[in-house]
Length: 84
Image (cartoon, rainbow, N blue to C red):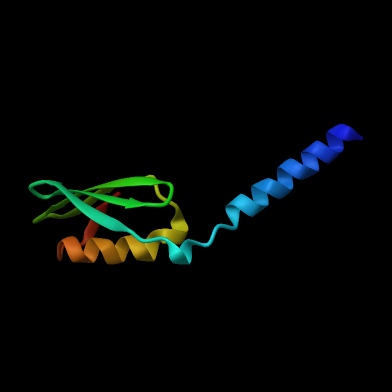
């Protein structure tokens, strides 16, 4: 019985963590060097290289932040996002 209660508490806490409000997350761009940037946000950082062939990102972010990431990338350069 005690094990069942612990499992239920674990599942409930997992659901609460996954229901995080991403609407308040801000994505901040920091220039590293030349055309290399770092985007900071929830869950980790994103490496960005902006060049004439397009934009390359190394991403470990969450899918719910995709639009905010795209908006931050549009401020860094006009190239199309080609490589993730």
